[in-house]
Length: 443
Picture (cartoon, rainbow, N blue to C red):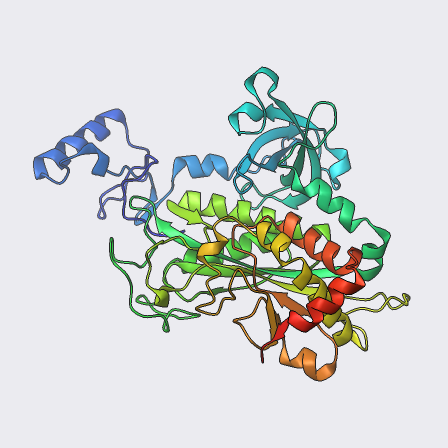
């Protein structure tokens, strides 16, 4: 957990270093301690006083932590299921807890549940009930044991998906036989920025000022270069514990900016895993007293050298060995990739409109981004809309990377749209011919 220089929100008690008495402090002892502190002038404001509880010399135990870490398995078969859903903004995660009579292994074993949609911007007050449908289960790294996190999507009482339920449409696309046959794999790079809670300014930045030039921070180590590593590491382990297919993490190009990667994941699983990983990150930063933002450019007037947040997609097709369908990863896959890029060029506007709020502030054509108004692709070129790796070009098969999505995009929307455009959508011959002339290749 990050060390935050702020008054503790939880009461604890501390014994003097030379004390050997490990018994709980009585009210009389507490009063005496407070009096002594005031006499010494050590505490001028009660908000600055931290109360610690002692287990033994030079060690402390937070009594609330003791209760949080209770192992209830010897006493009950019941578990806690944390139902998680996406709120009305399309980027906020909400959750509430429910007791389940016994451990479960599949979402179908869980009951549907409801919540007040008028409090999340998803329903009117006069008809506020929204129904949660359990869709994916992960182990709960906060409660441990058999307790679970449950990714849900949202419906009206009549069973219709509400407008903010983007998973429903994505599931339809990923269940299409043509998409199923291609087994689309996704690798998602999720970048984020950590902000100081009291001033909403990135960790490692001087308050109201800017850090040094870009260069030493990316994958850097050291107190003057890395800020928030404990949060990144805690999140990494929490994801592994939960069963999220996290594949790595690293510090990014500006202080307080980090990235984690999820995948390869198949179809709808990519969205489920990213949303659960985001929820875990929200909970960990909550505990650390640090603010998480997925804004694609969190500091509006930042100098160009500070970089910006983004979310890249490694888009794979992995062919089933028993299938005759061509794929990007099969022999001759580079031609499939180029056809997919052609389709993506024709729907550039549709994709940009679905790739996250505020993306125009990031896709400026500078600092390793493409212009939001122009589609381009290139081999090993990070300034293009779509990047193809050198190994893919050399081997004639592989993957493409869509560098346009912003860090606050909805992974259900983006992954489904990529599958729809490259696998299901067929342009007219005239449009295809015109696009082939206009789409620029930048090497």
